[in-house]
Amino acid sequence: ENTKKIVVIGKGRFGNACAQGLRDSYIEVGKGEGLLRCSVHHTSATKFMGLQLADMIDVLFDAEFVVYCGTHLPNYAHKLAKAMKEARKGSAESMEFIDFSNPDPVFERDDVSGTIDIYSALMSLTDDGDRRPTTVVSMAKELDEEEEWDTQIEID
Image 1: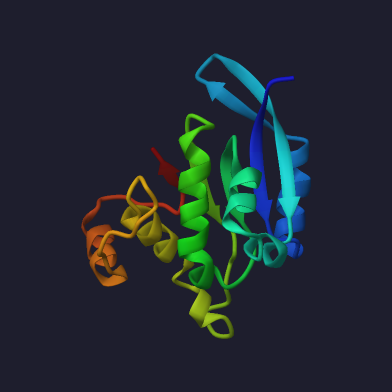
Image 2: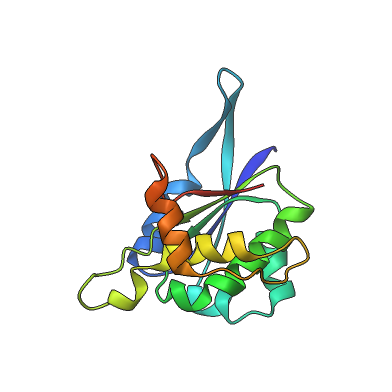
């Protein structure tokens, strides 16, 4: 059966709800082209982020959506971005990152920058996985200049 692979990272209340909802869902292939069933790979954020890079790439291979529902995304941004870029090289036509970490701005204020950190990490990696020199400050300036920006990042 032809499906759209979605990797849900996080087994807390957001991750469980997200994975449960996606398991019985369909995604439109294109305008008027029909629907494909979702294939969900659900994993603990702690377990996933503790994997070796090669194992992370294996999990993300052929995923069209990566949904992050864990905590501490800023701490994992570079490693996750590197795994996403490598997995994307030989698999799906596109890969979107969706941040559902939903940090509390008071008690989890260090997690608030997670989406910008992952965006910065994705943009700073060269095709061979090396870092380009960049800073989150310069990325924030670029984001402010754009007319519209959301938390979905498509990797080309």
